[in-house]
Amino acid sequence: MEPEELRIEEADIREVVDRLVRVGASQTLDTLTDWYIGIVVQRVSGEQGR
Amino acid sequence: MAISVEIQWQGTDDQKAVASTVYALLTARARFFADDAPIRQSLAHLQGFFEKQHPVELQTKETNYPELIETSLTLNDHVFAREQGEDGPVFVTTKRGTPPSAGGEDLTAHSFKTRFFEGAHEPSEDELKAVRGVAREMPDVIMAYPEAVHPVFPLGIPELFEPDEEPVLADVAERVVVEEQPEVQPETQPADRRVRIGDVVIDLSENANSIAQKHAGPFKELLGKYLDEDFRFVRFGGDYYIEDRLERLSKGQLRDIKDYINERGEPLTDEELISDALRRPLQGADYSLWRFTINYRLGRERKDFRFVGTAEDRRWATTSLPPIGQSYRKPSEIAQDYRYLTDPELADADPVTPASGADASGRLQLRHVLTWYESENGVLPVGPATQLMMPVPLLEDQPVVILRIQDPQNFATHMAELRLGVGNRGTHIAGLEELFQSTLVPGAIFTLVQGANSNEFTIEYERQAAQESRLLQWDDRRERWFFGPVVYECPVDPSYLLSEERVGELNGRKRASDSERKRPDVLLQQAFELVGERGTDGSLTALVDDLTPVMNIDRPFSRSYVESIVESGQYPQFTLEDPAIGLAAYRP
Image (cartoon, rainbow over all chains, first blue to last red; front, side):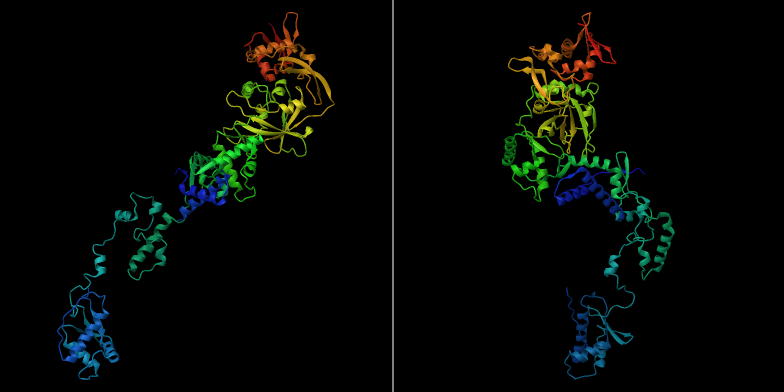
């Protein structure tokens, strides 16, 4: 079965925003990408674990 | 609503009193019973109650309560029915004041339980889907459960759940589960967690670090595009933050920053602006926030500010700050003059090599011979090779990067501009007039070495014994060329040293006019006349290496550019006689 195209979800971006606010300083795109990958992996594993 | 019943009691006064008391006792206990629900009480319990409580003051002072109670209730058989229980007689009545109907009448016909299940039936397949909220057929993996098991029970539950009744159903459920599990196996089948970004397929079941190492590129591109369109995020260079968390700069603060930069007269770092113009501590907890704020906010004020720094050295200039250096030609003219650098075939590759020295690891250096044009205008060409050692601008549309060039032999640091070429404008360094004119002469050989930061350089040359030559100079007042004595201590390339011996014919002549400057064939013709050897047929011959320095008086030319003019065929008066040694000829 062909894998679905990954779409950025609002919940994931909201988590990125929350982390930026908690850190309190600007971050590079590399850092945000690492955060985002972690968030997506966690969400997908959580969804399928339910 | 309570029901009051008028009952005609039978018997003596004592018997009436006992019967009515028993009736009141039973109906009080059965307060929430149905009207026709039987209310039972054994004779033994009634006896115990009467003996302890003496609820009735008997006229006969009777003490044989069991007999009295039984007689009283039996006499009123229109209210009480007598049954034989395991522990003796039991009397039954209802809240209606009559004995419960015996025989064929269904006492549960109107009970809550009966009404709840009225019309109930085993749900069909379609009804089960409707209950689950499923409009269409779901994949087998999701729908896989034994049909005989109620859908609300997960598959694992029947093993633990042992109903007291209907053991047959439980048996069927267990059997079906055991039979169908090997085919479906919903618990053991690995879930497909693959996703796609463009053509790249990514398995999200892997570790996040592993995914980041393998597929950071597609994720970064996807996220970068999203963040640039999301109004909540703001970006300066490669850094992102949340817009509504940024500090605001008032008009007064912006004016203070602008005045401070203009007062200092040179581009300043963001740290200097925070600490000196805004008077905020650099050690504060909100320093990072303020640094991002000032860069982002000034970046939005394009009318007053322009960014001229790099990622590690963020510097700001005002639009009213004059460009660094005072070149003879206008900056726009110089950029136009260097347009040949946009053609890789015409831009000479200056020898860029790894720098030597103890602290030069990974740094590059460039060896260069200064031309007259470069010395007069304080500029250096930045060709494709030289570009490798230049700083990368932080912003996409940034036209200028400030460079800091150290001259350790004179204990001086000079500020210069890397002007980035756009369209037909060539990239070059400007603002080095003071450095070149105070230390070097046209023809000087020097090395430009990368510094610790990408916008820092060191200019190095071997100091030699002082020499004096009469070199070409421009008299601004008379607007004539002349030759004057110049003392220099740097090594020189003799072909680029425009001395009186080589180009003495220029003495007293005017510069090439603007129209002549625009025509390379005219400049080349003048160069032949200055340094060429006249043949017997009236033609002039010269080496391209000798022509190039003279061509570089009024306008910059690379050796490749000069050679291309000679051999292009566009100007038939010029020919390349010997390509091996670069011998060119001009036949008027």
